[in-house]
Image (cartoon, rainbow, N blue to C red; front, top):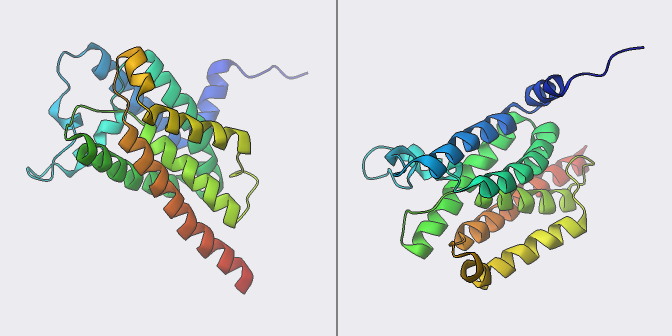
Length: 204
């Protein structure tokens, strides 16, 4: 009879199996601390950087989270969606997908709102959703598969947030442009990689 592994052992094993997902969650945890307890967000995490040689600031706003629920919601979806991409396609694939979708979703939010006062992983989350949705539709893979109900809920949530009702009820702005930009980016990348993968299989 063997002993069940402890909770910490299971977490460590999961972290080793999904290193990029784990690092993103740890960085978001740091970003939650900054967004929740710092009076002023450090410049390195604020969107911008092209005018002063700090291109990483096109990405770093995704790590800032304003409140525990904001962080917990994004961490939950990141663990669900990011781990699927990493397990099926590898850490580098997930890293590049996150980097591209972070830049596009952050730029979309900045252009739409005209402000750098935003943060959160939600744009990337929607990119991962769109990527898995379209990629698996074109080139089915058991690990990449998502229930239609989950996809439908997330799209409904996106549209609901865009009505502005939630902003009014909770008094906090929702980065709708980042969500929409992330979803479109993920779908386009899913279309590209899914088509290439499907075409490659036909040639074999």
